[in-house]
Image (tube, rainbow, N blue to C red; front, side, top):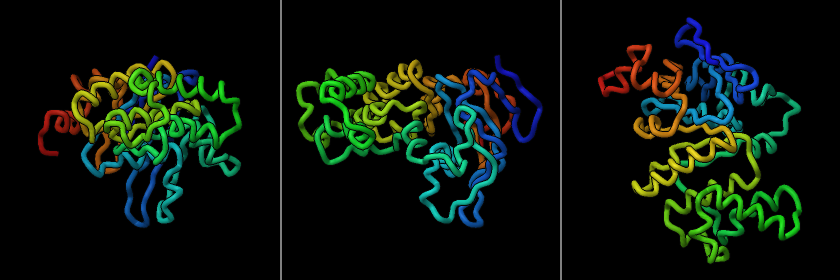
Length: 268
């Protein structure tokens, strides 16, 4: 059950505690004196696809990278407010950031396979985490490649360089590498923007299938893609959350004029 509350600047959509995966509470972030996110409050439901849309520079990727604290790597980044993963504050002093990033994996815009074999790419995180018997490791690698819809294409060349794969295959390999360590959340930052239409459709099908296993958050400039694959959509503009709701409602009956203007291509 989803409840809408009359709040500014956007209606707040809440989920029952048992369905809530990520919670953002009055969260702001700035780079030095340049604000990037302004007092955002929203919740991301478990085992759904949530898309962030909006013009370039609106804060979509900034918010996405906040979920696994990638901004820690930027000394000029300062934040206020709270983000919770399954009810736990991700900025708590005793939180293990490496464990957070295992639980909240990320796939970037351009495929970034490591300069090693297909097998070793997927095994990379497993080797860092713990020692596993080879049979167990092989089983996990096969599971991850199957989950990424890549196994049938690479099963006979697992020990060849990952760089021999096509761009679309490389992106699915990166997803398999992320899945191998069994994350709870998968963050996708424009994962298909550099791919051809056929590869893009494979990534979209993969996204739809993966929500049975984990929670997905997608940043995209492609509104048609957001409409095709997401269950919920958040529209951001100038660091503010303008509207957030079920994807069908946001695209067909938006509650805010600014949302309608953006979706219909009017000047905003």
